[in-house]
Every structure is written in C-alpha cells, then in structure tokens.
Amino acid sequence: MNRRDFIRNFTCGAAYGAAADVRRTMSANVCVVGGGPAGFVAAIAAARNGAKVTLVETFGFPGGMATAGLVGPISKFNFGGKRVVGGIPWVFVERLASLGGAIVDLPKGNVPFEAEVYRRVAREMLEEAGVKCLWQTSVCGAPELSVGGAISAVTLSTAGFLSRLEADVFIDCSASGALVGYHGFGGFRSAKGAAQPLSLCFHLGGVDTAKARVLVRNDNERSANPVLRAALDKAMKSGRIKSFGGPWAVWGSTIRPGFVSVNATRTAADVTDPVEVAEATALMRREIPEIVDVIRGADPAFRDAYVSQTAATSGFRECRELHALHRVTAMEFVSGRYPDDTIALAAHPMDRHLAGSSGQSLSFLEKPGAVPLSALISAKCPNLLAAGGLVAAEPAAFASIRVQAQCMATGQAAGVAAAMASAGDVRRLDLAAVRSRCEDMGAVTAFRHR
Image (tube, rainbow, N blue to C red; front, side, top):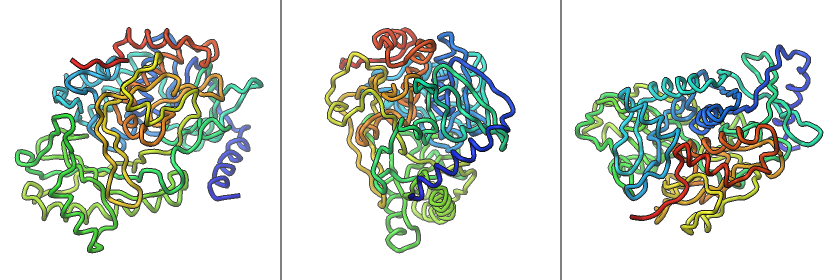
C-alpha cells in the first residue's frame, strides 16, 4: 500500500469507526461542500431556485482562497470589452463595490477587492438566500452510498465531534475533492510531480502605491512585475531563496492606499500528503521575509514595505477533478465553438504555473472558451455535481477555467442544476432547460465579437 492510500484508508476507518458517536443527523435538498468562490455562489443559486440548502465550510467564513488565502483579484469578468460572467457573481461584486470593497470598472474585467468586505457580502448573500451554513466543519471520510450508488449522506466533523448530513443532491466545490476523491468519482488532474505548485499570498503595507503599478487594466497585459522578477531571479540563482513565482504585487485582495497583495512564493508538493503540505507551507512562510527584503531593495516604491498580513492557508492550483459526462479538451476549449450545454465562459489566459521552476506557460485566448454543464455532472454517481477547481478539463484548458470568476460561474450553474434535479438523477437533466434558467439569472453562455 502506498502512502496516499494509507492516509485515505486511515481517514475512512477513523470516520466509520466512530459512527456510533454521531451527535445529530441533518437533512437538506442540496448539500454544497466548500464555501469558496464556486461553493458560496452554488449554494445561493440552489436556494434561489427553491432548494433547501446546507453549505459545509472548513473555515469560519466564506470565500475560500479569496479570503483565507488572500488570492486576488477576482478574474475574469470581461473579454474584449464585453461581459463574459454575469448573474450572481456580478451582483456580488457590485455589492462589494457599493461598500467600497471592490473596483469594478477596469476594462480587463479583473476585480480587485478588500478580503474583509468579501467575507461580509458573501455571508450576507448566503443568509438572505436562506442557506444553512455549517462553518468550521469538514467532510470526514468517504460519503455513504445507497443501493443505487447515489450519495445518501456525508459524515461531518466539527471540532472533532461528528454529525451526519443527508441530502438529495451533493455539489463538491471543495479545493481537494472532499467527495470526488472517493468511490472512483474523480481522479487526479495531472500526473504526480506535474501538478501546478502551491503558493502562499501575503499583504505588504508601507508601499508607495502612487508610484507602484497596482492595477492591471487591459486584456493581454502581463501583471507580473518585471523589475521585482529580475531581483528575485537573481536571489534564487544565488541561493538566497529556493523558488518564486511572478511576482504579482498589485491591488488584488486589498485596495487600500499604501497596501498591495503579493503572490510570489512557490513550491511543489503532493497536496494530498499532510507531511509534504506542512513542509511546503513552512518553507514558504520562512521565505516571505527574504522575498520582501529583496523587493524592498529592488523598487523605491517598496523601500519601506512591511508584511501586514499573511494568508491563513497556502493554496494549490490543481488537485483532483470529477469523472464527468464530458472532459473539456484543450483543443475544443480554444476552438471558439460553444456546445449546446455551455453554461459558463472562461476568458482568463491559459495560465499554467510550472512545477519545479519560477516560470509559467501563458497563452492569451483569441475568444473565450466554453465550459459545458456536462463537465460538472458526475458520470458515476447519479446525484453528484462538481464546480470550481473540480470541473472536468484537461490541464491546459483548466489553466483558464480555474480562476475565481469562472469558478463562480460554474458554481452558479451547478447550483441551478442541483435545485432542478433535487428529486431525480442529475444525469437525466434537460441540459437546455438548465442553461436557459442560468441565462434567466444573468449567466453568459455565448460570446460574439462586436
């Protein structure tokens, strides 16, 4: 038995061995696992379509990597001056902006925001929709299956105490695939050692933001800082730091004068291995002071910079994916064609960070790529959908689909589909009806040049 299988079997055994200690059993029409950009939008969409929804989230607040991981800006709402993501995601950012928590008028369609305002607005929208939120709660072990192979319930852990949640339909929006990782419902997107690396974001204060380039406004415009990159490259070659990415030092998850959010740390790890993740995270935290010292000396705008906040968690760019009715290929993604069940458009560059180096493979799109509903529907489980980072797509296509606005768009579609299928098999849904309902809510499902 290899290390990964041992960890999985140990976790499953612990969960089932403690089944007698379950404190309560709850029920819902739709269970959404993960309250990040995909998950909180999925929960709202399902609730607005009449479902009784329970959201399960590991942190004590929504937003996932946007709020716990300080990843920003929210990318990407526009392409060629036209909106490519609408509905609940756009309503969300407009509410952010109304509270001074976002900048929404950049032509590129990336939305820098304040992480604390993001938490507040997402929470308020969940409450308004009537979603029951189980904060600081995680799925514990493999989901229970019915005789027909559907998920009947999941075991949850809150501060070590177990509960049980039954639902008609489940949507996995977790970062690592808390549901799709079991029973053959999903697999790993990339071969071991080839997955995109982890990063740990942080905020800098004391920055002269009047002189620094804090906004990236236009399509096909690279956002990495070339001056800071040259300095960090020199530091890496000298052995001062082990690796870096970008760096991106902009208004992303903060828009306060004097502050920027920075995405610069980088290291590879198997994100399902607790030892590798712990070691990678510790390394990135150790390297932040060195990276900041390099940045201070490289650009006068950063001369007085200091670390004001580090993310609560490191983030990974890819892990598992759903075994879906359809897997989006790179060729069809760039073809410019939109299948009949298209429910979201992806306009971010095909941006794949390279394991084991500070480089990235970046290809700008000529036209937004299509994300079909069939890439969100399980081929192996009749009541399972996935959204966000678990959408079925080849690594190159996923490199565009994986960003926040697109995660929100796929979450919206998954929530609508789950509500419409709450009494039946998601694989038997009328895909055209789901797409039509998404469009009624403001989703953009096709793109035409002016």
